[in-house]
Image 1: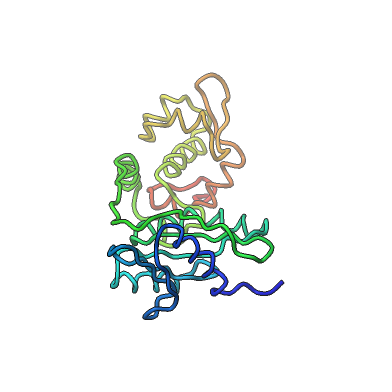
Image 2: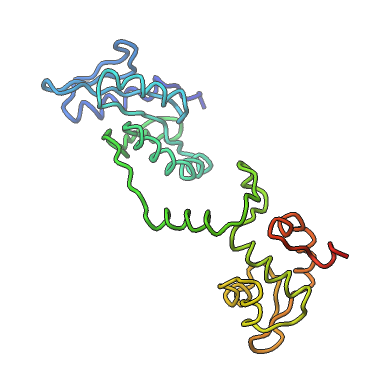
Length: 242
């Protein structure tokens, strides 16, 4: 099968625009596609076989000519290509929306470009704030003790405020032995102790009897692994202190 070229996308895009009543010409003043209709602002389309940063840069440069700039890319017809596009299409749309660029895909069947679909029209970007997510961000920032994580280390086990609270509870149970929820809450100062122990997200706790919990062997191992985090909380695991 011959390799798809940018020029292969031009005929279906041209036909699509002509169907909208535009006069269309290719390669005008460095623009891949230019379409004009009845004295309206010109439409510029930049073609690439796949979405890429160079394509985005081209689109941004064309915004000096007109507000109606589209990026057109091939949408592969293979199953693997379709899966890859589905994984990235949401982020691609978000990026184009933020930059005020339109997005067009050209379906490719058996190596032949065909159906043209407009996913996004150019428009000024108006960001929508999420008060709920903002509140969650600020609560996590305020509740977290110190700065236990290095920025950029998202693949490591992060020390969140929730994990710090769980460590407080586990450390107390490691030293004290089985204890009631009210006691754990009062001594550790963890207001959500009941939820943490009952949910047991990390597998650190087990119920001995109603309202009474102890730390599991896994929890004791984890306390040793989190020695540095415990130290930042002013705590130390029993094994580490011995």
